[in-house]
Image (cartoon, rainbow, N blue to C red; front, side, top):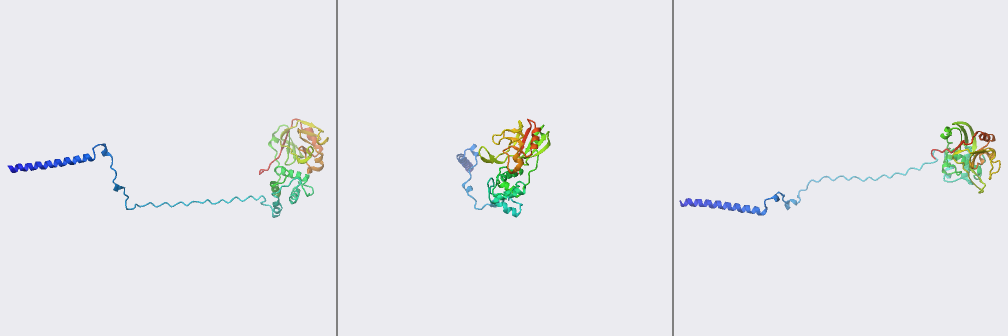
Length: 314
């Protein structure tokens, strides 16, 4: 009986110890981490997990560096040879003159070369002079117009090249204005030294003419280039013998007047010396009968169109 009670007593004691131990364990968890939302926060990694591994990771191969491209220096273009294609003899004669200017009064080898070359292309029919005289300057002007160059009376590079390469005369092309104008129009082609008398688009007559150039200016007592101005004009008067303060009576017979300082008229000087001299801006006719014909057949109000054709490369 006493032994039996002792057994039950021991059993109870053991159960009590187990319950007490469980309570202690639960109480310890509660102190360390209260139950709630904080339990969802991930724990910070331990310091040991931040220590890099001693085993090296396989490294990716380093990219091959792209070699820097050094631009190849571009050679400057070779200068165009203005005398390409000419003979060795022509090159030898013209090359020293390409940088020279030859004009009124110029002398020396280059001045003689200009006259000689102009003579060969029929713009200078006179003897070679030691210096470029009046006839020489007017020959230069007429040549420059015929090749579509700027008419200055001074030979510079463009004219030298034209002379050396035997540049051709620019083609004769009647402007549209000349072929579409109703009634009478006088078309003055300075490049070819021609006047086309046209009616209703049809060329009725063609006249050889002389235009402005290197001449003496009475007022200033100096020489200068007198230009025949390009443009469209209109005949507003005609006079058989118009008065002239500078050149006197009889200087401009049978004048068809289209501008105060520019007439189409007969020129005794053009008749006698040709292109050795020039006009002072007027359109000169070398035959009296031709000047009279123009005078009689050109009505007041007729248009006058003066033009200078240009070379395509100029």
